Length: 176
Image (tube, rainbow, N blue to C red; front, side):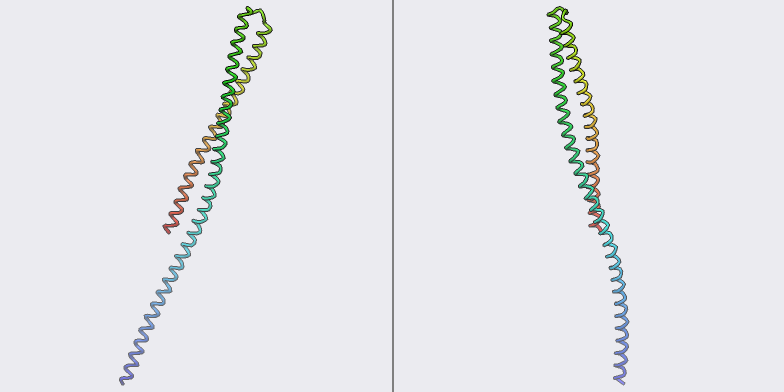
């Protein structure tokens, strides 16, 4: 009778242990499924952020190259602008000198030598045309410089936005 009770207690205990073990196993399997699902989600999010980061990095690199190119072009335009300005100043001083010489020659000859006066007027007219052409080129260069400066400012703003987006993407990646 004692052996029967022991066996009965043992069987009862085994059934209880089996029930608890089955319940624990089911809970563990459910938790594993949830973790696998969460890991798959985190993996997809990480891949998406890595792809976005690559795109932004490539765009940032392209923007930096464009910015360097525009800065170089701006420097070249500035140098050309300065050279044209110096040419204009030189032509203007030559023009003034010719006008002064023409006026002096006219005074000294009493206005009788019309051939020389006409020649000086022709030279003065040619110099004036050259100055006007150079001024027009200078105005064109100024417009180009303004366009390039505007483009450089736009690229700088885009670069700052890209930097912000890259930082934001990095923070999102750390947060998940």
